[in-house]
Image 1 (cartoon, one colour):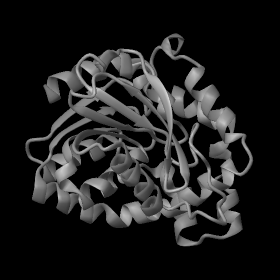
Image 2 (image 1 turned 90 degrees about the vertical axis):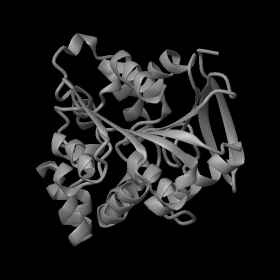
Image 3 (image 1 turned 30 degrees about the horizontal axis):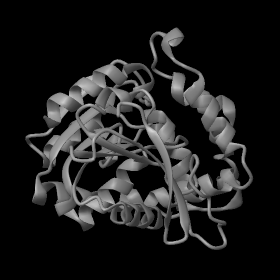
Length: 283
């Protein structure tokens, strides 16, 4: 049961791919990946946790092995992405789960927690932001796109979809590059080269403004429901600053905040440390 199995399920007409491992009678941990990744990012973490948890890791629509609906038929907004993952949870019959949310997985997961707080037993945010002080200056070109969504501002973001930029996201902040597998960034670049993938990601980047607009609602959820919370953060992340991790304690005084000496994709180099932190936190 420590190795993942691979599945596809129809979610209201959308084919969603997911990885599953562990004993279904044990507590469920839902793993939500980030940009531009997929559930593949959990390939090292899953075997380390499968003895203790039932693990479910879907590919978000438009990512990885899940269907990428045509943009004319599916608006790539975070509300819609969260709606598909919500229905995925319901179709799989998962009644309660702890949430592991990374990068864009965080605003998706937080939307679900906000709507169904009784579903979520605990939250692990790995470089998953919910506070404006967590956003670095690297977001400035994206902010310009939010403020003025012209083709010029859209085109200015295309470089971050290219293989060199994807690799940089993985390597930045990693102190020992020989320990960083090329598998993650190579697979992400392969997925990004598929037809319409870049346009889908640019649509998602535009709608990210609505996540920032929802930060006060996420924070109100934290204050009201006080979920058990672990923020575990690569402290060299060029996108989401350590201040974003510390900010959770403003609304969740009992939150645990831990920093790792690495970058954005902390699982690529620190899966054992993160697995140990999760076990100690949840069990």
